[in-house]
Image (cartoon, rainbow, N blue to C red; front, side):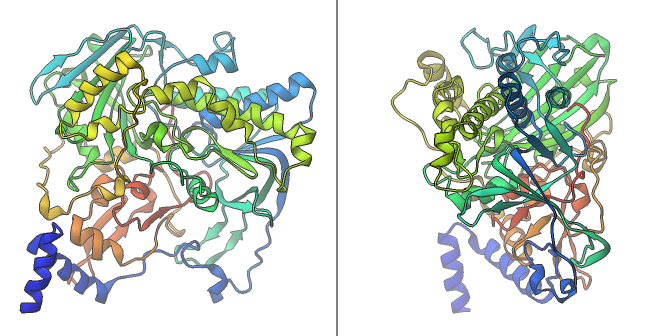
Length: 614
């Protein structure tokens, strides 16, 4: 008993307390006896040590290209288009290939989205004549501070970041699909449904290309009769534009130590619904943003409501900073209760929800941008983190980064001096980062660098709003200091014993909804008989650590119901169940997991959500 009390005393000093300590002892004792095998993926359990794979032919076929682009989002497609524009204009032979894990170009794209068209205008000055799907020009801006029952309008002056004059409300998936059509017309080879699962390297360490996923593997990790090895794609330069928290970018950060001179990235999760509403509530071209309720002042978050100029349709969504501290917060349920605010609910009465989705997004800004180039390739778009947080916009910066990367890669490949003097087999396109730092992207990121970290003061939301008003709006980032974010998002959670559970209202099925019916609207689909792509480095950690200390936060921060704690078969404890078929590829689990035990990897190509113009 004396030993126990000494241990409890230590726990109390560490902020855990007696209840948390005893809870952890209970879960650890039971988990040790009953932990089942959850992860069977070869990235955790190598196949060269598995006798079931001893007789399997593991040879991969390969193909070669000049430039390979990983990811068919706004950045990747912009890069592809610019490369072929330059090659065609100058009469150069240049093969450009792009691989995309979604079954269709745009199928995994999700964003608000209210976009600035300036990068699009640089890429295609005649985008209107080409029929780009930018149909809704912003006509009205609204910004409000919500209380639990009220709404306080905040005027938007011309120099405020929320001013959307000249911008367009779009369904970004449709824009991306259109960009894909332009790329194909220019001669880019597009390969949707091919998931890049591995970075390949030359013997000298430079990037050689990528390998696509193997298919035909049973859930227990053994080969099916239909097993097929993925193929290798080799390139002189590989451009990685996977989007926020790309799983190959994570490997590149470590291999080339790209993050040694920047802060850890900080993220948000964005959730979005598409609605058909009563025509009397529809105001095409209206953009509305709110801060405040349903969050407390120390939880970063806000909402958006955009009225599209098609049908009586609106998009409603919420962004929640993943640096929140209360493990009982459930971002999905926060969005559901937001729609019941007295100032918001009338918009949705009598309406029909037609789509739902979620995606992580970068919020770290300038302080968190890694080194962008390495031997054999570079990072573009949200793989790097070019979102302007106070504007809640990143598409224009992502596209511009793709344009600058393409121009730099082209100039590298067709410069005999650079190519002949390259110390590695594949050259490093160093021109890219040099040029991007001189572009309007870097100016914009520098100007807003202190807005997001200013919310970490004791005043929280109010301190952030005050800082934005005083320093950004008037100094435009010219202040001689740079604020820090203060650590990675996964380190922010407090033990459950120190936090108050959040009571959420039950969904009414008309304006607010349950999670599973929402996931059904994403169209997500995965072969159930394959190893889960949500891999655990240690199968015992979820119960021993996450559940014991934080009450299993993954069952709340996941917006698709992938993680679920259920009773063990013998009824003596809990075990983690991973419903991988539900995954909508948002990457939140990989980011927010307090133990950093979850590693998201690509499932088979073509799987995941099937967004239609989200």
